[in-house]
Image (cartoon, each protein chain N blue to C red):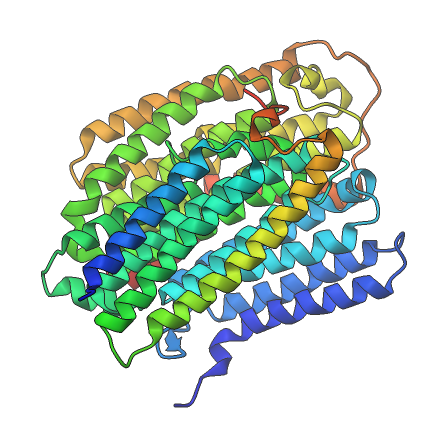
Length: 476
Length: 102
C-alpha cells in the first residue's frame, strides 16, 4: 500500500528540526546560543505556515494508525503557536537562570511539540501511548533541567511519579478496551461499539481511561500535581505546560470520546459531568487563597480546563467549536500572563502576588498586558475570553443542562475576584522600590502581539469562530 | 487448564499490588518499582488477549514491546532526577519533598 507522505510533512519537519537543533547546539559555543533559539523559532514558524495550508487535508496513514483531519491540524496550529511563544518569551530567562542550557531548552521544547502534534493525530492506541509518553518525558526533563533553580528537581520528581502512575492507569484502561473490541484502532473501537454490545470490561476500561486523561488535563480530582509542578518549574516551561500539553490532551480526549466512544454516551457522560462541575467549582475556590501568582494561575488553569470540558458535555458541533475557540483564546491569555511573570522575574521580582504591588508605576506596559490577560481569562467583555465563555454556555444551554450553566456562570464571577486581586496589587498599592523595569525587545514584541490578538478576537471573533465551526464538523 | 480468565485475574492482582505500593511507599525508588509492576500487569493483559482472542494478529504483543521500551525511558529519566534530588538533600523519601506546599 502506498503511503501518502505529504500528509505528515509537518511532523517530519518538526522531527528534523529537533534533531538539527540538537546537533547544532553541540557545535555552537556555550555563550552564543541565542541565535540557535531564534533559528528554532523560525523553523517552527515555517511548520506553522505548512500547517495553515494543510488545514483542509484529510486522510489516514499506516493502516489507520495516524489520522490527519482539520481537527488535528487546528490543534497542531495551537500547539506550535504556543511553542513559538514559549521560546520567544523564555530565551533570556533560560540564559539568565539556567546558564548554558539554552540549546537543551530549545530541542526539548521541539521534541515535546513533536509528541503533542503526534498525539492529536493518533488513530490507534499504540500511537497514542507513544506520543503521550514522548510529550510527557520531554516535559519532565524540561521541568527538572534547571536543577540549580530552587525546587525544580522536586517539581520534576513529583511530575514524573504522578504522570507515570497515571499512564499506568490509562494503559490498563486501553488494554481492557482492546480486550473487549479486539482491536487497538480508534475506528475499530467505534465499529465495535456501534454493534450495540457493552461488555463490563469495556466499561471498566473507559473509567480507567477517563482518570488517565483527567490527569493530563488536570481535572479535579486528578489535579494535585498542577500547582506544585507549575510553581517549581522554570516559568517558560510552566507557560508551555499550561497551554500546549493541556491543549494536546484535550485534542486526544475529544478524538477518543467523540470518535471512538459516541455509541455508549450514556455510560461515560455522567462521569464527565461530575468531573467538569467539580473541576470548575474547586479550581475557582482554591485559587482564591493562593499567595503565589504561579500557583494561582495553576488553579485558574484547572478551572479553565473545566470550562473547555463543557464543550465535550454539549456533544454537538456548536459545543466542539466553542471548546476549540476557547482553547485558542486560553493560549493567548495564559501566555500573556506568564510572559509578564517571566519579564518581571528577570528584573529580579519574586513570584508572590504582593511583589506585584505598584507594577503600574514601574512598568505600565507589563501591568497593562497582565490586566488584559487576566480580564480575558475572567471573561470580561470586550476581551476574547468573554466571547469564548458565552459560546460555551450557549452550547450547553442548547442541550438542556441549565443547571451547569448557572454553576459555571457563578464560578466565573468568583474567578473575577481573584484575578482582580492581582490587578488591585498592580494598580492601587505602592511599590517596594521605584526602579523602572526594562523589558527586552523579543518579550515586548511577543506580549504586544498577544495583547492585540486578545483584543482583536474579542471585538471581531468571526474569523476564528468560522474556522472552529468548520473544524468541528469533523466529528459529526 | 489455564484460560484467559486466569491471566486477567493475575494481571488485576498485580495491578492492584502495584497501585497500592505506589500510593503507600515512602521511598521514591520503591514507588518507581511499583509503577513498573503496574506496567507489567498491562503487558500480561496485552499478551493474554492476543493469545486467546486474536490468534494470528500480533497487535497486542507489539503494543507490549512499546510499553516495555517506553517504561525503560521513563525509569532512566526518573533515576536521573532521583540522583539530582539525593545530591540536594541526602534523602529520596517522598515525605521530605515538601518545599512546594500549599
